[in-house]
Amino acid sequence: MVIGDREPGKSDREGGAAAVLAVCVPVVVMLGLGLWGLDRDGMWRDEGVTFQVARRSVPEILRLVQGVDAVHALYYLLMHAVLAVHPGEIALRLPSVLAAAAAAGLIAALGVRLARPRVGLWAGLLYAVTPLVGHYAQEGRSYALVTAGAAGATLLLVRRVWWAYGVVLTVTCLLHELAAPVVCAHAVTLGVGRAPRRVWAAWGRAVAAAGVALLPLLLVSRAQAGQVGWLPVPGWGSAERLLREFAAGPTGVVFGGCVLLMVAGLGAGRVAGVALPLLVVPPGLLIAASQVRPMYDDRYVLYALAGVPLLVAAGADRLADLVCRVRPYADRPPREPDPGEGCSAAAVRSRPSPLTPLVGTLAITFVFLHHLPLHRQDRSPAHRPDNLAATSAYAARHLRPGDPVLFVPSIGRRAVLAYPKGFRQAWDIALRQSGPRSGTLYGREVGAGELRRRLASVDRLWVVAEPYALNSPWYPSNPTERVKLAVVGEEFRPLSQGPSDGPLRLYVRRPAAERMARLATERTSQSPNR
Image: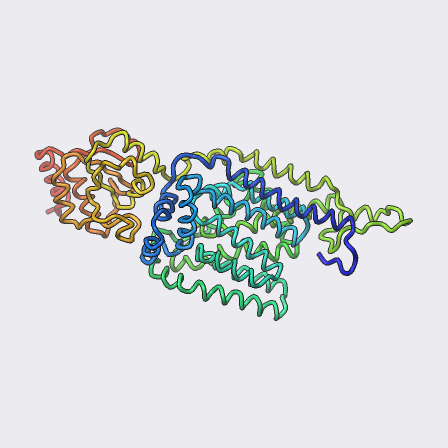
């Protein structure tokens, strides 16, 4: 806020207090929502990877990321320090909670800087009550930290603090390299704002420094591109789903209201010049690039979500100005009337109603209460794709010392790595070398021939299988994995035909006569018709 040579008056002090409050309230709200239900039992698969990798030694982590997961190297090192203090599920998720709270405050600060305190307050609160934000605020992965970093870099861009901008941008992209498209969003912001040449030069130097720091990570991760080979080519449905997830409510009147206010916010000048590129450019670039090589997933562009609450809040602010007939986006605080001037109608109209921020806050509270079932559902372990703790607990109840366990495929070993207690006395029949010793995530397994010999020596076999692994057309390229499918399918049968408790199931060897009959049937069905 430019005041010139005038001494700060009452209105300036009030405006400063309002700005501080507008930033602090969203931080406190996001912190409370992030801590709510944080102690839910059970990590899911991605959290399990973070947990087991971060508990390795620093040399073991560095050895691992040379071959896999280099994109998360800095995050693993950070979590190594966190889990060294207390290795538990709450500690695993707490950095994400703190990062989400910081992001809410930074988004609010952006609204204050670009417009006025009530815009910042509403934007920060909208961010905090968005269900998708709550989801990743309670997940032991890097996406909430990346979002906070991108929001911080955007605020520093607006404030033109270039050395800090370069540092924050570098750290953010090192946490996840797909945060790099935020640079393109910032370039659009500078272009729309008609930044002078000196600003472009300072920005370019900061970006170049970040690029040099990021180059080693890009070179290593390029060789690991196969890790995202499972991603599909995104289409228009991906863009629609992203918009619904980014809104404070994915369906109904809340979603419709968010869209209308976003449209209204497009005319909000400085806010739209920052928020719209942040929202559109990173997802647009990744979706376009993924038409050639798929690399897009909603969580990879979570940081772009910051654009939605800023646009919605700006649209609500314009609507409030229209209703209250208040001059929009005044460059200076409302003028205090001179002595003897009286309180003219113009002076009264230029002073925003103190009730307007409260009305907007109550509306956001209604949005949160309307989607409270979504927030509750998200805090249930059943809402994640799997529950590694449940698998380990089932194993602890049923496995006997020395029981052989087969993981189909080897990534099923993540339950053992996250919660080893349930499998402590079992025999991992395919394992040759553990993950930490081999520099891999899930360890190295024996060859196909050795695995056949080991399986031939057992009559009872516990199988931990992914849903797609058994009774499906899945055909792995790894010969050891093919042996698993062949031997389990031909020589074993599940002990019970009923539903199993999770992915762990007991198989017993088929009688010799049954195996011969099954083999003959398969040969007959595969022979060509004469």
